[in-house]
Image (cartoon, rainbow, N blue to C red; front, side):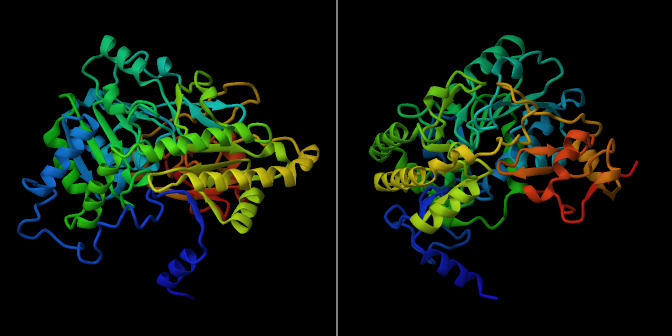
Length: 481
């Protein structure tokens, strides 16, 4: 078998055009100030300490806070995962036992479900709204999400979604302020480090969230694993947050990652490239909204979508009579285009700080060619699939969430046994299983295995799975009660 380095060399030699993370897109120009391996250093005299900064790291974090308008910013070098988990660990340090329930947008990243196991927090999941054209969980009813806060210790929201749809945070904050002003609002804005208003929707820091997570590497010129956690207000114990970051992040922080975060901050002020990209994306929409269903600003105000980040290009190919798998295979082989992700009928293309207008023009040309080549097959199209997140073919349906009998932590700690799917109905799942993309749990640990869940598990070969080790054996881990 080839070495890891050879695999990387072979991939890079293909000359693929990146519409995926990281946001720097391999741009040597953006990363020209990064000296490797020279900068691969440890905490030496004059280089400060990440977990007790007083020098150059403290100054860099201060600049980050100023750039985003937060009171304090912490660098993350274990990815957004460490940020989400630190949020929950910090909550537990100040919560009363009766307040350990956190309301969670079910579109949450898998790291949130890990945070629930680590912290012991009791989740109250709120189902997102399914867009009937894309069959994806793109929206959230902000009023429902922030209604009736009795017994809730915190709110955790994912905005923007993986696909660039933004939730109405203003309404959520307004209802929180009026009904339970002591409750902190935590926002996983992993895919929105570039949201600074202007061309983009406003960021969660500017809107007034208490804690905001950025996976800076996803859209800015930061190296993979580099992110930020922004803090404002006094609703979250900052000492507990700092200590949480200390024990959840490595004691050997990468200076390359931290230096790349400083580079990413410098790029925030260079708005011309985003303006040029915006022009090209608008042209793409104009040319291709006929043969493809494209998520655009026109979708704002529908199905729980408050706003849309145009730098995420989500297209539905079902009108062409072919699957997204087939379309992606064509785009990769013929046009060397590498998307971020795809399912059976949708493809997501992501722009970043390293994208260039000619990249979008190349994508437009490729999609035009694809539409011209395959549009004739549309008449042969089979009935469109029902996605895991759709409970009816009607408009604006919501994700079906199984009943919860144990918290994720209780399920993790419980004795478990593998059970054949045919015998699993009504049992409690001991694992969190997601269909990927997008990775939203079909069932979380501690939830009941329902007929709806089994319907998808019994079609294992049709999907890619996260968290399900028994997929090939037709087994699921069940809590042994």
